[in-house]
Length: 165
Image 1 (tube, rainbow, N blue to C red):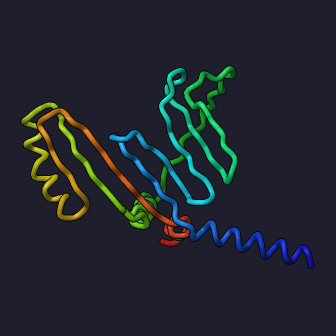
Image 2 (image 1 turned 180 degrees about the horizontal axis):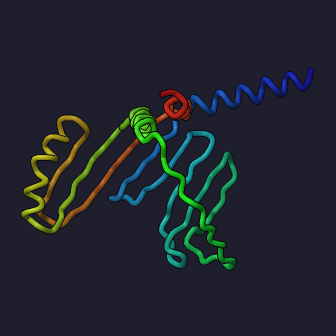
Image 3 (image 1 turned 90 degrees about the vertical axis):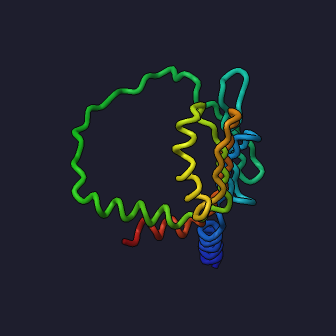
């Protein structure tokens, strides 16, 4: 009886995680970079004085800090594996396209200056086209660069896009 209750509880938790939205935020103006599933976890990249980069992981009510750029004491052995040839690249391309289409773009704002007025002028028609279809794209001539991206998807949609063809 307890085993059946535990099994049902685990299945309900699995369905909750599969259908709960995952949010990715990249904001260069406020230096926010994180992936979040509200109520379960949040993984943030934070600038650090000593190690340049710190990964802050919050899972439920636990808080962990990782330093991905620290030098490893043990060197990994390099294995020379023969590269297998990709047999059907078209199938991989279609799966990748479905994976990308399963992600919803909540907000996209790009404001850049390349530093070259000719390159800025060449980008202007493309950014005008993108404004009608994707988000807000601007070109400035003042040296400001800003990118704000807010993506949202459900793990179930990502898994379904990978499995189905």
